[in-house]
Image (tube, rainbow, N blue to C red; front, side):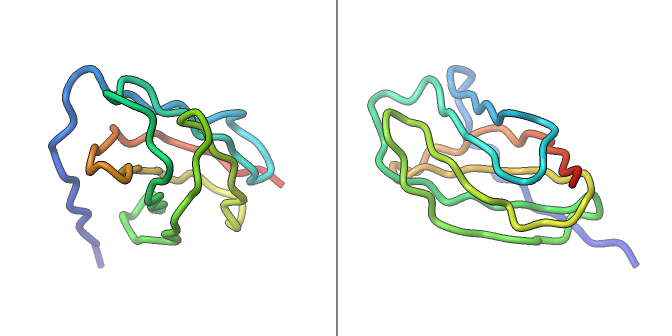
Length: 98
């Protein structure tokens, strides 16, 4: 059975997302670039390679950066971010290896 992921397409070319270190054991840092001003929080969604939503949470940011524990098993996942101003950042692949 295949799942479908709906990806919103409202990301101006000047917005980007960096997730690091990648790969790692599951604790990542997100850095948002290109937003018109500093944002204080973001909704982080994590999907498996089949497109199933594995986790979603609000992340507090400082200087457009935040740390989180993905709480995931070994595998390849995709992360998408929508900041508190409604900006949507391109999805990035993350790899969890414990």
